[in-house]
Length: 345
Image (cartoon, rainbow, N blue to C red; front, side, top):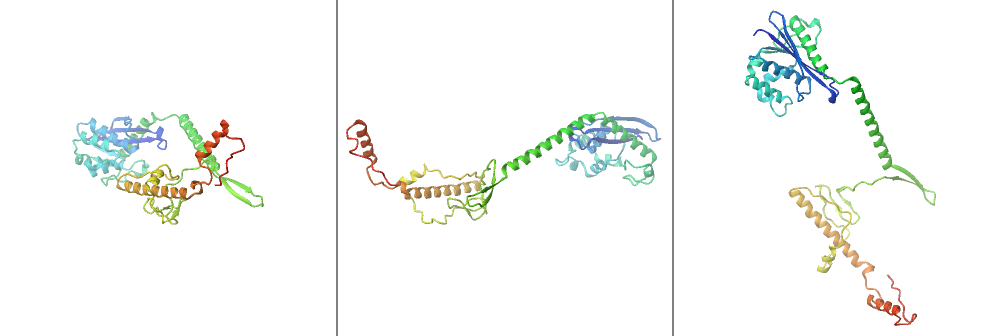
């Protein structure tokens, strides 16, 4: 009952996440200063740092004893956990909440008793810290505490050393990582050069022009700057993230007839690509996009109807020209009697 338990955790190769090795140690010292037992072990895979290994050593102590002994630790987080309470230590934001729950179950959730029997002491100090450095109870470090702490530290390092990867594996992994980084940087440099190749062209007048050649062309941005006008004359407004309809140079577009409306379904506007968001905002964006599409269809149909290619041509009709062709093929008319008149477009 008067024995003191010293715990410690150790982590080797902390900067190598794939090859880090953990271990914990336990030293039992009697009240007279006799060494009773030394032990070490490895925490489970859910522990990945030295603080977690030392907390697991505390769980090993309380789960082994039918009562809570005097525990000395050099991890301040263990003592802070007792003072914060069970509810604070087991929240979802605590990475060691699983271990704290195991400890709480072993203690019947009596954190006050464990906090009174747990003492923090500074670790890894020189021999000159004996009688000078103070523990959590404001008492100086004794030679027995200093020696027991150094012994439990060696036990924890010995447990972690058994699981360390060989040096040749670490060096091989470093070499592979450097190889991947080098070729990744090389690929990025080549890709940048392929899409930013400067070419100088000289015209007939001797003037030079610099252009940039690209190996590939990316997708066009769905949203453009506020106030910019595309090729069809549709103004794009990006203030609220949606495209607004505003025709600047053709405000007198009249409603088309039913026949023209049916024809607009065949004409598909180019350069429009839209992915609405979800919810009410997405429906509003979709409605505005439909209005823009309808406006562009009307404009395109109006330009097509006003174009020269859709005006009635002067001369024989299509059926007349087809009959003339049949007559020539079957010999119904002399070769030079009738001819096709060229239609001026």
